Structure formats: C-alpha cells, structure tokens
Length: 201
Length: 160
Image (cartoon, rainbow over all chains, first blue to last red):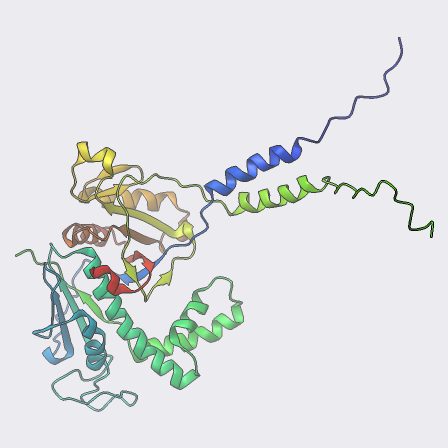
C-alpha cells in the first residue's frame, strides 16, 4: 500500500466565518456604559449622644409637598430659584468669621458655611423625579460655590479636580496633589445636607 | 516599452483575505474582554430621572444594585401597577432589602466590604414613600453610601 504523504491540510477558509459569528454575539451582548448619579451619604441610625443645639438661622429648611411644590424657609418658591436661594444662604457669612464669603452678611441668615445646614424634608407622596431635581439643585449650589473658590485658589473648577481625583487612571503622584486641594475646598464649604424622616400627613 | 505592456489580461489582483481572521479575532478579543454580562433581567419599568451634578460610578465590583419601578406589562397581572422593588431577579418588599444587602456584602471580598455603594435605580414615577422605606432599611444595616443613579441631563426636564 502506498504511504500517504502526511495528513491532509485542514481548510482554514471558514475560520473567519466562525470568528465573525462570535464577534457578532459579543457585539450584541456588550454594554460599555458606566452608571452615573448623585452620591449621597445617609445619616447613621444611632442618634448622637449629646443634643446639639443649632440656631434656627443656621438651618435652611426645604420642604417638598406631595404636589411637588417647594417651601424654602417658610416661603413658597419656584424650583428654578432654589439654587440661588441655597447659595445665598450658604455664602452669607453673617458673623463675619468667613473671610472668603461674598454674601450679603445678613445677620438673620447663616453665620458661617461650616455651620450652615440644609434640611430637606419630603412627603411620602412626593414624586421621585421631583426629589432628584431638588437634590440636584442643592448639590449644584454646593458645587457652584466650591467651583468659585477653586477657581480663585487654584485656577480651575472643583468638579474637574474631583473627577480627576476619583478617576482610577490618574497617576498616583497627581492624585496626592489633588487630594490636598480637593480636601481644602471641601472644608471651605462642607456639605451638610440633612434628610429628616418623611412625613405622611 | 515592452516593460509596461506586460499585463495583457489587465486584471486587478485579488486582495488577499488571509489576514481577515486575524483582524476579526482582534475585534473579537476586544469585545470579549470589555463585555459585562447582564446578571439580572429587569422586571420593572426603569426610566431614570435626569440630573446634571452627577458623579461616575467607578468600579462595578463595589456596587450593589436595587431597582424600583412599576412592574412591566407581563408581571402587572400578578404584581399590580404600584411601584415595586426588584432585588436580583425577584420582587421584594422593603423589609427584605436589609437582608439582601447583608447577603450581597458577604459575597464580596473582605477588603471591599466597607467601601460598598448601593446604587438605587429608581423609576422617575416612583413615590418617595417607598424610597424612604428603603433608605431606612439601608441605615439599619449600615449601608450608608448610596448613589441615586440618573441619566445625565437637565434636571428640570424631570418636572414635565
């Protein structure tokens, strides 16, 4: 019997087809988007041991009722005005200890950004989208003020600095440098947003 | 002259397709590595609200998801049209959220257990009552870091 000259070569012509099939499968199932949203910290469940006395003028009360109407400091206001109202309150600097504030120094409003607290209250029937809009505006008020200070001290926006700091691709030495700056700005306008339990009346 | 007159048949040579599999494989590997398989299918309507002051949710391994919304058409007969909570693949009541968080937390590696974020993917038409109940449960199990997941956009569009 004649010896065969080795095994016959396998045709690789269909390899591309197979690869295409797999490729299309992964193309279809891929989701590359990353989620984004509003970061918030919830208050811990155990109440603080000592009762802290907070002056009424240092609290900015925001109430949302079930129809989505807004009550800020006992005044019915439009959602669009909330950001400027909150900024005016935070930036007030009533007792003159805040050197960087540019507010009106109204003695009836907050003493210092580090003492100013925004209290958010909502009804059980409030729509989630309204709540998010309000949250967005309040966070926006803080961000605007922080941007202003960052622009003054470091010549760039706070939100950009923070985003770069949080980005995992940023090299470590840049991160260290940013950490200091971000912390400093955050201390100038600390985010004190209290969320009371919802009322159900 | 004869140098140029050689190509008598005048046909363009066929492009070699020998490297086609390589190119396709390259693409294939790219998509294979970036693919994240969906681990749960949505059983609730989930149109998120818009917000502009958002932060990206980096590092997916540190996130626990909670979905809230009205059940989709096929589940409405059984579960009604009131917004519901979906944990993994099933509907749940607010009291089950705490256990779910503890269970998910136990699945994560030790070093990540303290830095977990809870992503609340809530439909824009849900009511705050349900969200408050969830928040209360999260506080009970000390999962204080939450992220209200939203789309990027103008927040005032939510009101329409």
